[in-house]
Amino acid sequence: MKNSIYLEIPFIPKKTVTTMIIDGRAPAIVSNSLEKMGIHILKAPCCEELYPAISYHPDILLHPVNERDIVIAPNVYNELAPVITQLGLHAIRGNTNLKSNYPHNIAYNVARLSNFAIHCFKYTDPILLELLQQQGVEFIDVKQGYSKCSICIVNERAIITADHGIAKAVKKHGIETLLISPGYISLTGLSYGFIGGASGLLGKDQIAFSGKLTHHPDYGRIINFLDEQQMNPIFLSDDEAIDIGSMIPILQMAA
Image 1 (cartoon, helix red, strand yellow):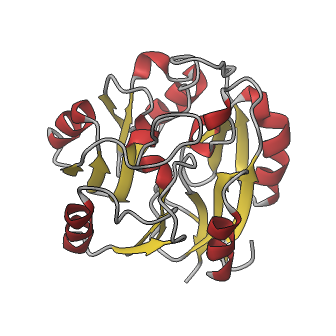
Image 2 (image 1 turned 30 degrees about the vertical axis):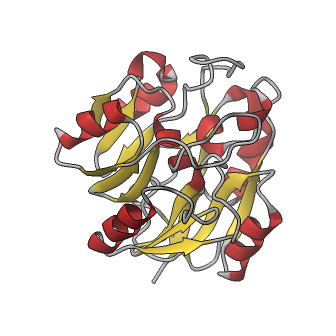
Image 3 (image 1 turned 180 degrees about the vertical axis):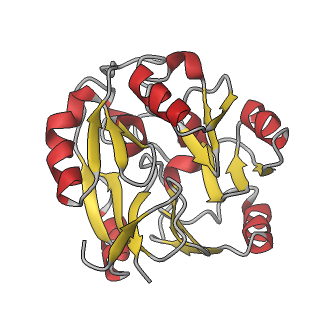
C-alpha cells in the first residue's frame, strides 16, 4: 500500500501498522475498530479441512517468515496468494496440507520474537522450517504445538502466556515472560482460547486485544506487565476477548 513498508521482524512493527490479517469471521466491532484507526484489513478465508473453531485463524493458515515472504498452507494458497502479492509481498506455498486434528493442524503456528522462532519443530512445515533456517533464526523447541496461539507477543523481548512449558523455555533465552492462568479467553466451540490468538501489535508501543480482559483473574498483572514494557493496550470491543487466531500485522507506515 502507498506510504507503507514491510515489517523487519515478523509480528513486531516499529511504526504504526497499516495492514493486518485477521480471522474472516472476526466480529464486526473488531474489524471496524481497526479500520477506524486507518488499518486495512485482510480477512483470512476458511480452511474447510480444519475444525470450525480455528478454520479461519490466520496464525494457523500462514506464517510471515521475514519482511516480504509469507508461507501459506496449500489448503488456502489459491485464495490468499493473490491478495498477498497485490501488496508487494511474496506468497510461498507450504508443503503441509492442514488436517482437522492436532498435530496435523499446527505446521504454520510458529511464534516469532526478535531472532527466535518458537514451536514444536518436529511438526513444522518443511518449507517453512528451511526458510527459517536460512534466515539464521534461533529455534526454541517446545511441546506446545499451538505456539503462536499460546503466545501474546508484547515486544521483541517480552511475552504473555498461560503455557508453563513455553514460559520455562523462553526464560532461558532472556525473554521476559508473564505467566498467567489459562482460560478466560472465548473460543466458539471449545472450552477456551489463548491470549496470543486474541492479540496483535499495532505499533511500537501499542497492543490490541479483541475484547476486554477485565474478567481475567490476572488482569491487574497483565496491565502492570504491559506498563512495565511501555506498551499501551487497546481493547477493540467491550465484550470478552476472543481467540481469533491472532491479528497479524504485515505492513506499517513508512515514516
